[in-house]
Image 1 (cartoon, rainbow, N blue to C red):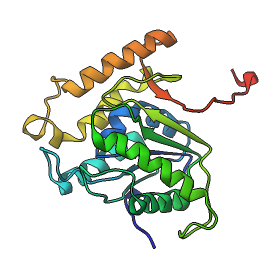
Image 2 (image 1 turned 120 degrees about the horizontal axis):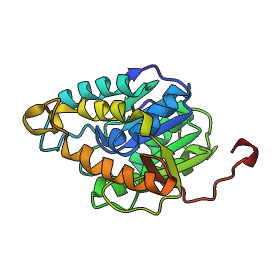
Image 3 (image 1 turned 45 degrees about the horizontal axis):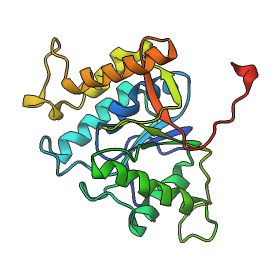
Image 4 (image 1 turned 135 degrees about the horizontal axis):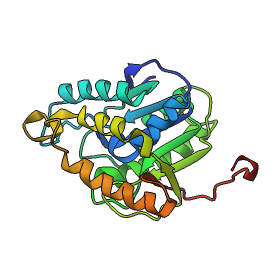
Length: 238
């Protein structure tokens, strides 16, 4: 039984899937990387776990429309909604089964998840929920539709807290598109819009982080991720 809905694109096997506790989290935390992947021909998707219905600004309907607009800017192949309760994202059997069903349906090679070191309970709740779902999706005897699926790699993206980054992605060439994707979530800014001449605070703060990580990688701007497992690389591809 399907427990999720498609809001943009077509359901398909994905190369990368990014989990977002709320609308706009994926853009803020990993948007530049998602744009680069899409431009390279990868099938990239985003799954919102909640509709952000308890947020101070914007209605669920407004935020769903903004997700569609941002998806086009990012170049996503697919965007979906799991419909779990905003403000209550945590490791539960029901939520894990629902998310595991998505993993079996979309079969991503790489899963991008919010880092557990974060002040927002929905962000670290999503991390722990994802961990259980990853395990369930791979179990042949799990009470789930579809064939078992094991994700090859999990990366954690930075939210509000600090992380120990061991994967950096150069996003200097896609900053205008990245900012446009964030601006698409207009309901989250004062008055429901932001002037073309005014940079939202969230963009300024994230740009500062990108500059810091970029300095370490000797590029202009970089997004940071953490892999909890060693990464196997092919040196001849360097």
